[in-house]
Image (cartoon, rainbow, N blue to C red):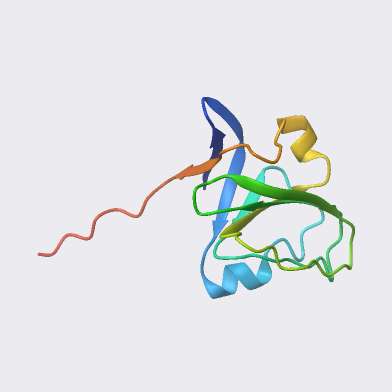
Length: 118
């Protein structure tokens, strides 16, 4: 668990899906979602089986938002060239957060603790 930050603004709480299982599941099975889901690596998404529409931001390796779109349920998106990861949120969230193409964002979250050998 962590936060999506743009400059000095905290946009939302965020979950990170960066392993195969969590990336495949995404927001499937949820009836609503507060905050954001970051799927990494990722350059395309679908909403097949979703129970609500979502906002999607495609973000490059530098953290710049290169495309945003609203996706209705049961749709396939197209791959976005240059995207390293995506941010998914419930439809309308980006407008509330003021997130736009060109914004630079970053995920600030809990990092795994250093493994100590004994």
